[in-house]
Image (cartoon, rainbow, N blue to C red):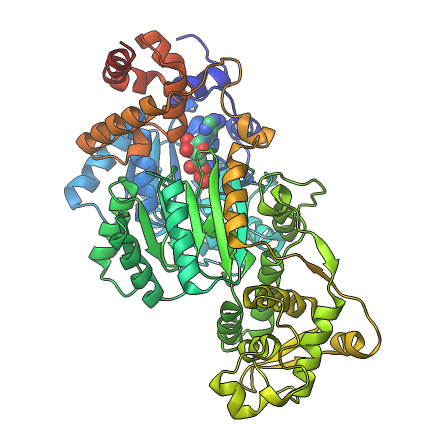
Length: 612
Ligand code: ADP
Ligand code: ZN
């Protein structure tokens, strides 16, 4: 066999035409037999880093993975590409395990996925009897107590290093701050490791936030959003089970294919929901944060947060599940005062109040941003970024600042006149001059400021007050019925002429328009780059739909998730290039040798028929 270059091997086995940043360097490094730590964000393409070396080296690469569902997905994807992979874990029967072991001993497996327990239990016999080319430790942050997913069995993995001192080790993770990184190196006892860090940026994810909507308006906006994303898989994250259930019901009643997911369901039901989503037989999942861990589905096209997440880490992990195939995906976050109250309460009761409140505060900063949201995210993860992204609502529709000193004075003075014994919604009622029963009961209608902000709609007050809260002009006394207290800065506004700059309120309707408009805008170069620019041609959208159906049929027949057969990106390329021969089909980015042989005829026949 002729010696393949790494590029050629990548195309042959995986169908990709070029490496993503760092992949080639890492593959080369692994082939040289040295230890390394790989930090690549979710969807960045970690798997290739050890899968390609595994195929090119003599022996078997052992991949340590914490979850059976993750192993299954990876092994399915490799097998669907005709690559010799297997998993050993507690879900197999004794016979099945025996078969896998036999295949390993007979060198019929190049990639063996194992749980940490399993690897350690078999360290003495199986692993001694086969030639191991590399240990790849996936989700390596699980080894560190500082990481967010510590697993004691991961800590034992250092024994592999002791027992197999000559086998190189590659640790991989998507989320590890500095402390966790150092801890991974130490815990796994990596030798003189090189650390590869890829940017955390996910330029294909659009970012947008809508503030201050009442439930009804949120629901309306969600329905419109999903109509805009016809046939596209997505997740709606809700803060509570109750909200999951009611939102899911609402969508179903509106003819949207949707299932709920939360910890209150039985394990079987949860597995079923997850499978339906993975196999594209349900479009939308309404879920609590319990959903998503261990899901490798690459064609999730959008994420909605019904409520504010409790930290930027959580938020980034959740939106990170969209667009793993590198194609554009949309994210939408709703943010209300009610969320702030509820999450603050959770944080204060959490036992780590100050850290958690600080995290929540940073999350609020993101939601209140008046500069590019992506810059805020990247800066949060320690990547300094000075350029606007052109793929967030702020970049597409920059907020206009105005002198809001008078508004701030009215609000603060109203708080002062209640002796700081007023909550958020009553404050808005005072400003608007609404005679609600609560207002009358407390005599707030007698205040001098009653009705002083009549000319500003309630929704706008809501937004302005959120802005003032975030600026620190007043704070919430959680131990006093959530009453509002004026801070020193607020006093300066009231009594020392301090100026306040506010941002003009954007109506949700305008916002929605700008969201749709941004679709037509040029996406950043880095997003488009991955579509093969050398060949031109516009995609045929009807053909794409047909290809999607065919993919689903093929996948169902083989019992694979559709994206394992071909990714969305590959289908888009097919719809653009319309290959009419097997050779041309093999040239489509994302089609490797094996898939070309296995699926080529069926797909080419369909495209031919369609093109007639
Ligand atoms: P991670 O494990 O880092 O989350 P994966 O390894 O699952 O990411 O890869 C994410 C997606 O990117 C997959 O759909 C994969 O097929 C695709 N991918 C990876 N490397 C490349 C590449 N060099 N070219 C095109 N697509 C790639
Ligand atoms: Zn931006």
